[in-house]
Structure formats: C-alpha cells, structure tokens
Image (cartoon, rainbow, N blue to C red; front, side, top):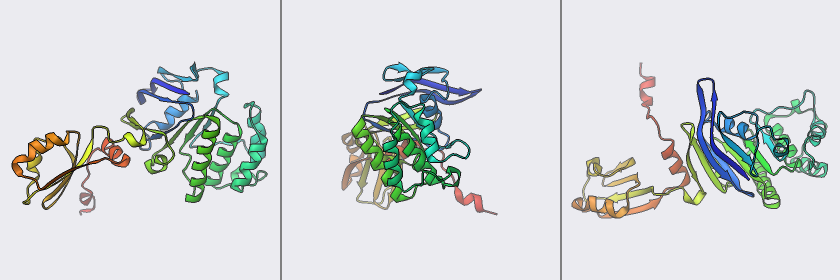
Amino acid sequence: MIDIKNVTKNFGSFTAIQDLSFHVDDGMIYGLVGYNGAGKTTLLKSAADVYRPEEGEILIDGENVKDNAKAKQKIFYVPDDLYFLPYSNMEKMAKFYSGYYPHFSFDTFRKLSKLFGLDIKKRLNGFSKGMQRQAELILALSAHPTILLLDESFDGLDPQKRNVVKDLVGEYVKETGTSVIISSHNLHELSGISDRIGLINGKRLALDCGPGEASGSHSKIRVVFPLDFSEDVLLNIEHKKLVKDGKIMTFCSNEPLERIRQKLEDFKPLLLEEFPLTLEERFMEEMEGAEYDFAEIFKV
C-alpha cells in the first residue's frame, strides 16, 4: 500500500510537483500519465526515497519511507534512465540485488530470462535499449517486491514485448498483491493495464479516476439544427472543443443535458444527444493549453 500525502518537491526555485496526493491499494496498478517533464519521475524517485520532498510524506504500508531500510526492502524502482554496474551481465546484477532483497529468487530469475530469451552471461552494455528494459524488469520481479515503481517501462519495447510485460506485471500483481505505480506519457499504454489512472498537469494531480470514471460531470453533446446556425447559439452554454459541420454541432460540456435542452429550445433542435467522454478525451480536455497556428511557422 502506498500513500502519497500532500507532496511538494522543489529544486532550488523550481517546483517540480506541488501538493500532490493519491493512494494505491494492495494489488492495484496505478497508471501515472503526463507530458514529458510533468513531474512523474520526480514523484517516483520521491516514493523510492531517492529525493526528499520539502513538504508532505510518503507512506509504505503505513510507515514513512524516509530513511527506513525496512520499508525500502519492499520497494523496487525501475528508472527511465537505467543503470547497471560497469561491465556487468544479468547474472552479476542478480547476485548484486540478492544482497539487498531477502526474497530474491534465482529460480524466478532464470525462468523470466528464458521467457524473454536473454543471455544472462552477456554484458548488459551490449544490449539494446529494449533488451536492457527487459533485463531490469526481470531483476525487479525476481526481487519479489511488494511495491513496484516503473518509470516509462514500455519505452523502447516492440509491440509484442509490451504485451508480454503488461501480462507479466498483471499476473505478478494478481499472485502477490503488490502495489504498482507505472508512469508513461502515453495514455494508451496505461489504459489497458491500470486499475486507476492519475494525470499530472501543472505540477499537480489534475485527475485521479478509474478507467470507467473518466467522464465525471463532463460529456460530449451532439446537436442537429433544422438550419445552418452559427456557434453563437452556444453563447450561454459552458462548452469546449466545438466542432461545427453545417447543421451539426458537437462540443464538450459539464452542464446537464436538460439544462442545455432548455437553453436551445428557441432554436428547435432536431436532435440533442449526450455521450460519455472516453478516457483519452477527458485527459485531452485536462491537458488543453494554448492553440498554435502552425501555418504561420512556414510563411516567408
């Protein structure tokens, strides 16, 4: 179980994450999504006690992770920027980790290495980026942690290996009840594996929901008018992402459908229907920022 409580981390005058809180139950995979530089790595390193937050606390099974060797034996952190001992191979790294993790299983290590088809005696610096990620995941699962922190762990993997990793992590969590935080800038990578997903935007947690809870009070509205109306008909309706195609208007709104119907009744719409937002649509709405006129870039 992981509790992130009001965590703020600064680097000098720069604030990387601010007042960030969420909870990960036993046996839960929590997907952490955000653009590159949003603060995902900072949070994971704070959870692993690599960084020390200026404010807030991080609890592992109810214990503060700060300077807590017992708590840290439960954690395996797989960073985005992988590091291996100089001139090491997987076999040497397994012996290295077995000295820190009392439940490290060489049997699991050998089985997983065979599954991924990796040579445990070959130097890791000769592996491709994707192979190195596979090797570190093998070492992580062989350590049998109860807290698993994965930072951009799909990066560099081909589609087949991504599916293997997803299935493997899912099965490990099912068998052991491990709590997992897995970060990515790619929502699609996380949506199929995560029990809950958090979006970091503007240094804070902008959204924390289950895959089926994304819409919340927001929805997509489609309205068809008898005539080709201008978008002025929506002036008194709170809306975003308007798409107009002749008599058809589609937009997002957090107003109830009946209220929208009342506001549009003078225009006698032929059709007014509501759809829940997909997870991707809701996240894109939260990440919505400045709009760019790309055509201006190429004008001479």
